[in-house]
Image (tube, one colour):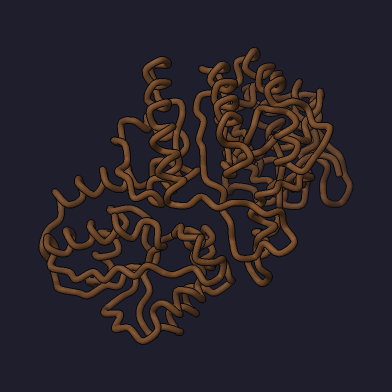
Length: 432
């Protein structure tokens, strides 16, 4: 179907004045056909526009618009349907999911448009000449690229797909066009580590500054890997050796480039039980959504929050977390309790759904929380970090809702931002 489907029209907007309605389609701007929201953003910047509308009843009409500056048209479009992933990555997390989770979790997308719009990581394995030209012509920057290995044969093995364009050629062309890229490597012991990782880091560093950052994250393995390729886990010993080998290289590259470039995921330090680098070494946190720098940021924010904390009404609060950050969270809660008069009881939830090797907070299910809290004195409230829930819906990975959790544990549940400030905000709410 041609054009962009209108989902909502903002009251008082230009679109409302033109009597554009939900169900209509915006087909073209200034004669340029629209394929998606990127085309809309690219072509709608002028103060004078001619738009073509296809109504829900099949009528087609045009309107000329004159607006002040960048006044928005006031149209909200139906989100695009992402291109599906054709890879069969040996480490794909979706392939390791059990049945019965939120349905969107099973959707594998591989869409460079979502990489540009939302920061999704993509492999660019489905990209061709037309897509490359569009990225360059429309300046779709930055992009977030899952590289995993720059050795073409190894990369095909990791992605489970043959005949794809060599990623170094693709990224080299994007770099020549001054497209900024952030890259990641999912590290699989025995496959893309060792000399292969040395090669990958060297190749991507050679494209700096257009490859602006590179994160190395450990492969995530669940207990649901039946009939999947065998992969070695990242153990505590492996993580420690990895940090001792690669943190000096990250520091060397930061000196060479004048800014941090190579980042090691927090999970390596947590597994190894080693101290984190200073927050300054993470720059402006370009890879924080990839689990890089979250604990150092938490520690930095903790110090500032504790300086401002004041005494108040005594309450007892249970704080739920994954096993990985438990040490750092519990240390902060002891200090916060002494400054506020509140009693905090941290509970690290063992991950029965995915397996005990999965320890991050964002992959804790509602059912596992219920099991971990069963039989405990939970105090006045239970704090649940927002990263455990689908944004805007209050639903856990296993479809349990916050209300259902509250009923199951018989205690008030407060959803808090996953930060020291968020916990303090939750404390204010618990005291009401």
